[in-house]
Structures are given as C-alpha cells and as structure tokens.
Image (cartoon, rainbow, N blue to C red):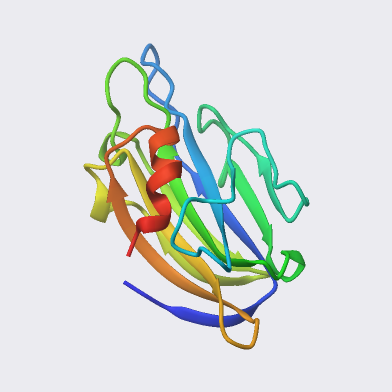
Length: 175
C-alpha cells in the first residue's frame, strides 16, 4: 500500500480502539513519531515523540494520550507541523505500538482499532490494522522531503513484533 501526497504543511494522526472487557487489563496503544536528519535519513532517529512528550522545537506534539481507549471516536491524537520542522530533517516516520504487560497483546486482540491520517479535513489514509493483526507494533506512515523541500506522504503498513522502546529504535527501517 502506498499513496503519495506532496506539499504537506500540518498533519494529524489520530488513533482509536475500544476499552478492554471488564476485568481484563487495559489496552494502551501509543502513537510514536521518529525524526531522521538529512545527513543520515536511514540511521537512528534524532529524536522520538511518544506518550506524554513533544519534539524539542514543538513541531510534533502528542495532543491527547489515552491509556485505555475509553471515550468517543479518536482518543489519541498527534499533530505534526511539517512546515515548521527544521530543514535539517529529511524524514518523519510514524508508528503505533501496544504497551505490553505480562502477555503480549497484538492488534487482532484489541477491538475496533483504527488510525486516521489527515491534513485539515482531507483524509490521507485510514487503516484498521487487520493486515498486521498478529503484530504488537506497526509503522503506518512516512513523511519525507523531496528535492524542492516539500513534504510528501507515503502510506506504509508494516508490522513489528516488539515492545515500544525496541520498536522506536527500529521503525525507520520500515519499507
């Protein structure tokens, strides 16, 4: 799956899921964004934005962080202000990871998962994770600068079997 949209300025990544059944441990899904510099776009991330954090320059912010999925609609939201991101950054990779408790939880075990990526009121991508149902984390999007400095979007869906910390270190290698 791949789609391209160029000239992006400000995008929103929104995530939703249903709470766990009564008596079961809560499912905690997290949006994670990793930035990569122009001089090493395939190397380790320069910084990672995830639960309860924002980028050092304030261009990537986790606006809402749900730990249970409780609420109506999209419960967790991250904003990426790509037009304000320093020219030294060439890529931003976005993924979703499930916080792991005693037993590994995969997307297929979490009811009604969905992610939406949009710019303004235009949906760029939507997904329900059914293609990566046996994964504990997934890369969902890549934003990259083209030769003119414009940001382009590529939809990605690649599953990983790792905890959020390991996933954040590896997510830039998604294809």
